[in-house]
Length: 101
Picture 1: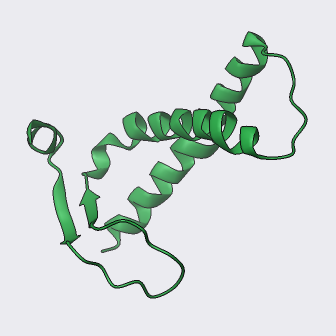
Picture 2: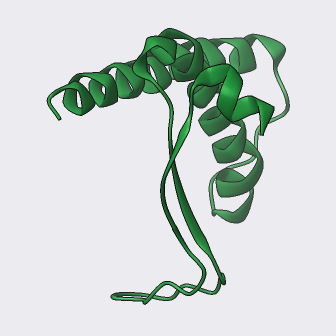
């Protein structure tokens, strides 16, 4: 568990058989993790990048959206938008509300 030690992470909750309150849950376990907020400017952009690739490689491919040819310029613009308008604001908002306790 060197990742937890390196980034001072904590396991908030773990359940081997979580009770489903609403919807479907096909998994057997649930684990909630927490990492200190001092890494918001590192993990926020990484989260934005992850969201960008998930949306473009999974969600858009499964949708009825028009498929366009690959463009490096558009990919870079999309990455920058997701880093600064999705990932970083979410990380900073999470940090703000988590500091309230």
